[in-house]
Image 1 (cartoon, rainbow, N blue to C red):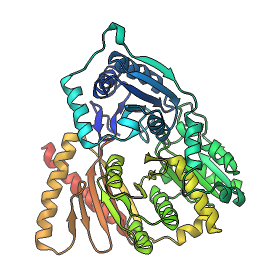
Image 2: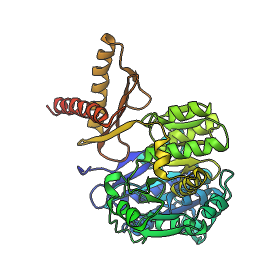
Image 3: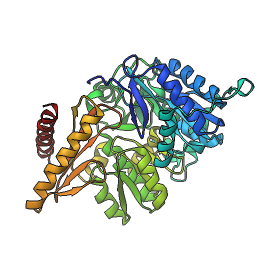
Image 4: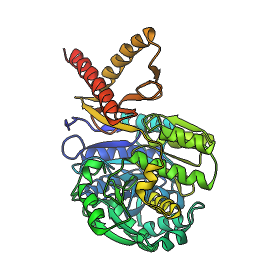
Length: 466
């Protein structure tokens, strides 16, 4: 990955490589901006297991104390746990110290508003205005912030999942499953094995020590899960689960040791939840068309948004959706909280499997079948990425003027859509790359479409460089 000179600021928050594009001074300034944004009131903070997270914690505390905030620290927790606690403790905002699925040398902070709700576009703009203009409201000496420690966050999160309207723990307990869990030595290590034990599962733990030394890539892509796949096969597990660094995502490995993408996580959960209650669902523009078939089978509506949890949540609230998510394996359960929750996904998928009476492989075979390809083009800066996407749009518009297919969808980046396939290009909000996602009836066709698009983008980048 090419190293950016500046931190990446997006709807997800602020991220960068420690000692390269992210330092404590910038974090403290963002924390002062956030403390000003919430009016110096109560803020919940928490962190993932990265070795740099304690350092960033002190930087965040300095900024919040300076603006007079009452800080409640819930400690080392998954991101969904932290946001849930902000809601439970009636905080005016929260800061999560994490880089989620980014490599171990990265870190960052993510912001939420009152009661753990993700920032709206207007709120993000106001926070950035405060930060960029340095319009900080600093507290006088006798009104500095205070710190409170809260130690029962993961217990509360587990109770919320077990009480969800769609969940029946006894069904899972009666199935007597054997489950392999790979938490990547991330924040999921402190909660997911506990949930599985509560559900009566016989578990095999892999990378479940929250020490921040990731023994595999933080993003649980199929290529990163070789050890988990082998563990599932050799242990005779019924299913394998893997988290990213902050456990807001979950992916599945079949009983045969075959890794599935996050698209299958969302498809499984959507089919499971819709079997319990009818209602609309929401997903991003780059999520598999499996969902189109699933909602048709259940007679409900699928709404698509820009990529990013915040966009999905806003649309879910607008239409009253009962489930939403992204093809990364991040699923949002309104019954628990409006944020992606990899721990709740363990509960949903174990019950889905238990009720099916079959295997994970059989669940896959019963799903609509499409093949996706995901690739990315490294770029020198976000500004260059914007130029490339703009040039690509001009090029593809010219093609549409002379050909009936593909059509263009511009919800997020540029998506070209044919009757049986699509390809989407968009600037990443978390890495210095342009992402290219494609889907087609076969893996060969999907990859060809992806590669042709990457070739076009590479040519456009050379034009900019010249």
